[in-house]
Image (cartoon, rainbow, N blue to C red; front, side):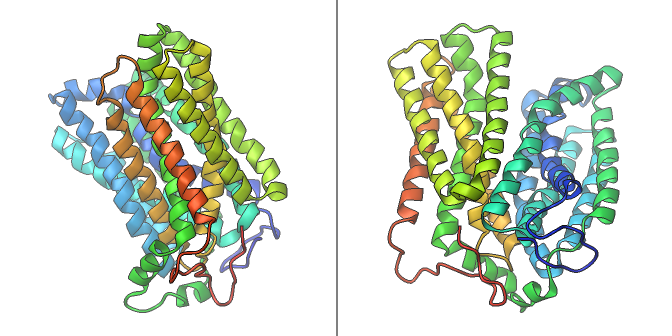
Length: 422
């Protein structure tokens, strides 16, 4: 349910306005969009800065590192000082780094500036999730996260197209200039429309010199958090493996044309967004816990089915259905796991959100290279990784709903605001 906070806030109980949905959605998508929009420009950057492909790709790696580390910094800071100050500082840093990237004269300058850009963009990613937890809980939070996926799920599909169109109008520097102007617009919108949602009472619950470390310890020793946060990370791992290996598997093994592969990829993306919207409509009736378990069953089944189809050289439909099952299942896994992971941390949702984000990037960053270990010939490595992610996530979920582990705290909710069971 919606809760009171400092500053003006016109959301009705149990609901968040469309305006707030759009603001939070833009904040969530902003960091990842800074990655995808410049991908079509990598060859142009390599030529312009007289750098080889591996050096230019380091600018992608540095941005990912910034997004991961920045979430830890911004999440903890937002728990201590409120959501707005670190968010606005992060956006300003993103704007400055974007403009500086457009003026970079060497690849090493670009790599360093992309790190700063990732650090700034991370504030929007982590704090937007914390804001949702400040206002909503339980099935209502899961429903809101599902609606966010409609916004954020289409971003990676649209961003490269935007970057490609900007390259038609100018050089690669225009992409970073556009990101800077977009950041400036978001800064104004966040400053005017996003109220402070982290109350002084919640900040007092974690005051003290070791408040940040204490909050991280509480999160990391919470059994349900670990299981559900890992579920989101393993779901991202399966998607990263799919993104990294599906084109090789389908075009090499089944001889799909690039156009046909693009159609399959787009249909799976639509399936992910559609599944998240189904989740949004049924989560209040069914509950996030059951939907999470069902989504993990679907992800594990699809992953195992894909592995069997690959090993037995099954017809194309079997492979496509298995891939579709894994991707769509994440429409049920991600929003419910995220809502449940943050449920018991109303006073430390920034730190909890940061750890979820770090797990997502860490597991995704590990699984993507694993896909290439066996070569691009038959997609076996991709199938193994996707099946492993699904089975591990389901196993962790089943273990978390068994008997509690001795000595592990099951709730760290604020004394003045008991956590709502999912």
